[in-house]
Length: 349
Image (tube, rainbow, N blue to C red; front, side, top):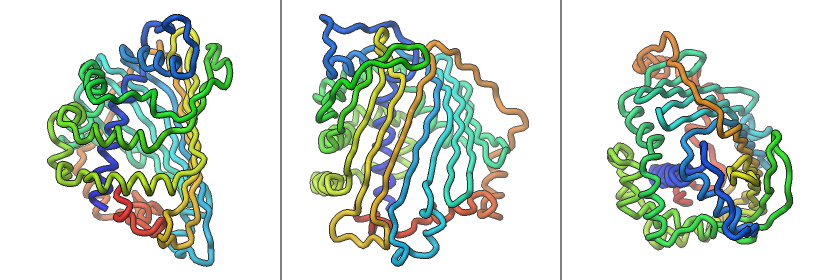
């Protein structure tokens, strides 16, 4: 599981750095030669995003579970008998660096709310309506993750050097039509991700020393988790790709991009997951995922104020140690793991 977590975190960080170009304010890009093909529209969106420095919006992720109650462990039922949702809002600016994030996790009829604020090189974490100063290690790691704007030109060069083009991550990208979102005329695009291509490209990035220095310049992540020894081999890559092809069904991504400025306004993701063949599933037959990301006016100003009366992080650590159920409650099962798609260590992702 430690290996799976490490690879997962690196993959998320990889996607974040690539996606960091897509959140902020930019000049209209336009389409070369008036090319309105789906591929040209996505390429224009990527190009328009390269100078973006801020973003505000909201997100929601919903997981619905198809379970066999006769086989499902009793301790897992409270978490799986209704959809699990992760939702929230975000506001982020790169220059000067500032961020305000709200995250709400709902499962088993319970809700856990978390907040994160950042101003320059200071971070705060909110739990149970109390703000805490983030520890030095978290500040260093989060600063590395968010402070990537100045290195986007290096990333673009690296992607070109490795022959990676995110436009190729769709198998059947098509233009659905034209719509209006909050007064902005947009193109609506839809396609199915090529998971084999995405995994191949991400793993190529993860094995690149230049990319790792962009994601984790201080080596805080690699030093903490020993990631360099945990990255998958070529055999692991082939196994992961084979399992993904077995597990993912009806995987679609819809994009809404501005007609005039090529900026991203909305993203919707839907997919179904089934257990890999010959895996013990403990009554979990499938998972349906829906995710929606909405971006506000890209010109919206981001202002963040440090939370008042923030306490030392050591107080939160002690409180969780003394009474973990007070903070985690029904989510202890999530943190501890509960069956599901067989042995998650074997899945290696």
